[in-house]
Image 1 (cartoon, rainbow, N blue to C red):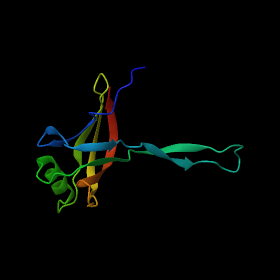
Image 2 (image 1 turned 60 degrees about the vertical axis):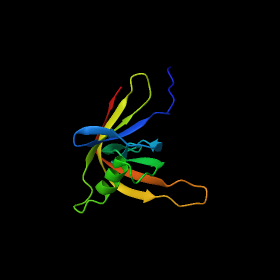
Image 3 (image 1 turned 90 degrees about the vertical axis):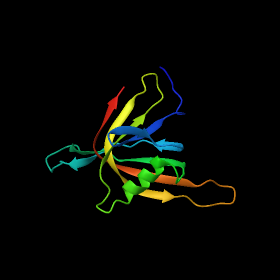
Length: 139
């Protein structure tokens, strides 16, 4: 088994058809994919039965050091605050394994939070991307 460090993991968004890396990432929390259980048990069954519900691709959370002069950070803020609602955009998480595996998905920025200002702190931000559709993995 080949292990790989997480340092260097990228989160990219497609801006004008070009994938652009979000700068100053501190952590990227990939999505949790799940399905609801559809109960099918009836009075004739001896054991519980169920069917798999639709796939729910979840959310991706990014924490970073905020730089309001950074074009990528300004783009994220603008995208989140679009008057017509947050549009779905194309995203990629690129891992640091040998093949630079990619998780590609479509999603929109659900929330954007500027962090607390403290005496010895940095300006931070947290952003959540709501995934819409299926996540694809390219190993």
